[in-house]
Length: 371
Image (cartoon, rainbow, N blue to C red):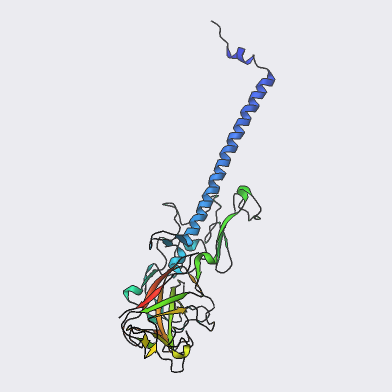
């Protein structure tokens, strides 16, 4: 039988051949290490991108459904009416924020002109159909692994302390920008490519706000009673106000509601001098003068007292308001929610919930006056 001993086998290779084998094996080992390292880098890159997507959805998330009433709208903005100021705001309830609960809207006849935020508690709108679920959710808006701390790091594990945990957070007013500094954890020029490049997102004003300038709302009177507001030379009329919840950390003034208001409901001759009227008994007249049972108002009113017509997306409350003069939000005693009688002095309020979605046309809405 013929056999080859190991020593005979090795004697069959020259030194050059042995060196070549070692070189090939070393090259393969280096390629394997490089492959594993690239796989790890790609995993961390993808994880960072997934975390950015989660951050964006935690601020405002909208999923449109073809079925009416089934669209999903959620996030920090929807519940609190404002952007977060840091990553930590999405993890832990900020000090003195209201917790998530059924909230009673507050109507203030004289909100702060610069912001529309209530100056005082005003009139609580406490009917069952008027409440809105608002406030900070106890679970927060970003999920972290079970048993872990509340820290939320990027996929590269670029560690950092609260409130942003190693992410770069910045932005101009009404925007929120979050950036991962990448593998090298350096604030790089945007032209840097590869895993060392920065990766981020920006929630723009148009992503979380709706501009209601020019928005029109119809009002239909089904009460059976004509509604008429006579201005008697003062400019009194009917308007619609929208009440928007804005969570804050003001312990002393826990009012948390913002009000924006429309132009006047037209009068008998569609002029402010004739106050407002809405036919309710079906004869097409109010006080013997032609008047429709459907009237339309436009946001905002003339005069430019409202600095902005942007409101956060989400659900808000509309309320029909009687104003005793031509200056809305001036604190006059006669600027109050309109009650259901012919002169707004008694009966039930006329209110309606309304939902706004990002990057979608403003809702087509009709408020109904009922007996």
